[in-house]
Length: 640
Image (cartoon, rainbow, N blue to C red; front, side, top):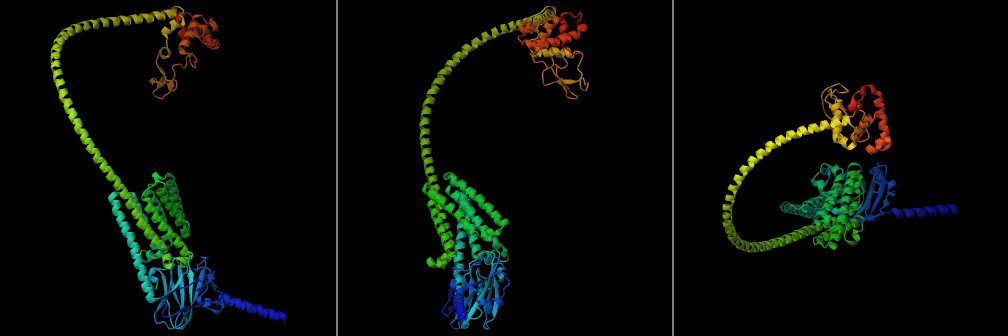
């Protein structure tokens, strides 16, 4: 018995808790209610992970208890691979004669199916979403609207199936048609004002750019156009008017526009505030951020466009621009930066308010309208103050230009006065100089007369000198002939002495003083019967790289003048090697290496090595050297 009572008590507790957990509060609607935004506890949801549930299944009694209350201010599709069913409960307290709609706000929602009951309480399906062409919408409006099929007295359940690749805020609003028309007209008028301001600012700055050719105007135009494109993409205006038949572009539009917005915003900051000059370190940081932002954009565009949803990353370039303006205004005392800071302050506040609105806190502080359009208001105020910053910069430049012009005029006046005073001084000096020149001219005339007389005397003297010069020339010719004869006789005498007696090194050096003389002697001795290439037997040659070497004109082989001589691979000066051969020959190989070292100034070991080589050659050619006299040392030079 106790067991049965326990079971019954447990069932009652579970039933009561079940009913209290899933009971949904109905929203009362009457003819006075023009608009109503459904609150968090008035919307229940069900996740469809299979994506296969139908309205018949969802609306059945078995599934009513599976809907759960929304825990956030705005319902969201947390699992983007699933479909989500949302249900609201509406109670018409009386028959409402005016038509009404249900509206969804988030323009990036891919697919929405509405199931609204008609007068027979049968559910009628309507479809909308960002994946459909704009013309397929029931109402040609940027938001998603579904017509309520009946406004008869009674309670009704409205079901909505939401499926989106991006996480969206499911904001459900009830509006009468009259209220919707007034709201839509007001909103589009505001859009016209906002985008008209963008066009006006762009055109104005384009004219300024064409007039003054300053780059900040050009980047400012690109920046505010990027702002306009981003706002049009997020508001759904771009889809409505620019690409209504290409819904796939909605997946890229806001990401691309955000990239251009942050990029041109950073570049405009650099140009307007002269960051490269006033803050080089911050300029480097901006350049790095531009590179990273570009790489991230490429990854989003070509690898995973799902990364475009991380819009909060744009707070980084926004904060950097804001910080740069504060730094240059505060530290560098640059006047236009104060308007720049003020403009970014309002944009920063709009950004914060937008985040608060997305988190669902805007109703507590600022209201839905201000929260929803806060970023647009921030951009508008930013554009105004950035224009003031550019104007202030132009004013400063104009003031500097005016000061420079005044300085130039003042300097020109000083130059004119200086020029007049210099001209007066020059006139006085010219007059004085003219008198001096006239006086000197008279003196020069007198001197010219004297010089003419002297010239006549010089002419007569020159005639005598020419005669003497001719005589000297004849004497020089005769002396040159005598010198040639004398030089020839000296060479003959020297050869005779070399061949007749033993000379010391100084006397020997008169005949063979340097390398070129020795090489010339070897060349004449080596090729006295004519040249023939040892490689190809060609008989024509040209000069080689080393003096007196001969290069074959056919095979280009260069033959050294030392090749096939006793001096090949020689490591001592060639003239000393000549003298060593000369001494060895005159002493018939009997001179000691110590004596050779003393005469030549070369180490005894080196002299011994060369003496041994020469003595060996003399032994081999004993027959050839017999009876040739003192000149026989020359025959030792060439190899057989």
